[in-house]
Image (cartoon, rainbow, N blue to C red):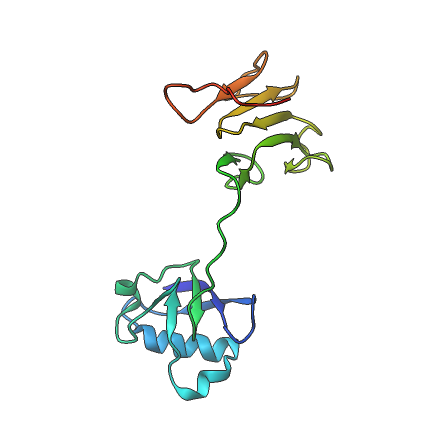
Length: 179
């Protein structure tokens, strides 16, 4: 099987190296770590098998890649755990679900956000999208309003006026927004 993984070397802060390796699910994690170390020029590679980490968890060098859960596209720590990424700010999310940029998630704090391809838009869409497609307003309670423009569609349909959504079933509409 072919695995493409990102390897982070603790001796080079903030740098990941993408490595494509032909291996078998039955390969041992320790041997895999040694091969990755050679591939990325890990300074400790001459000392044998460096510890391999998935997140903050070290892998048993004698376990197989399949049992360890090593999969294509993973980010692995070589010689040290991966640094913990800080949680993004904001509890309200806008998710792009189709088209260019699909899968992108924007975490938003309370405020107003222009959505479009324009240079001043805080939620930037791919080239070809309207310069200003809509405006989102995130309220203090985490609920949000999608303020429509002529070019915006919600679930593929044109909408008149603001579309609102919230978190709590008892009060789904925005109640603590400001202008």
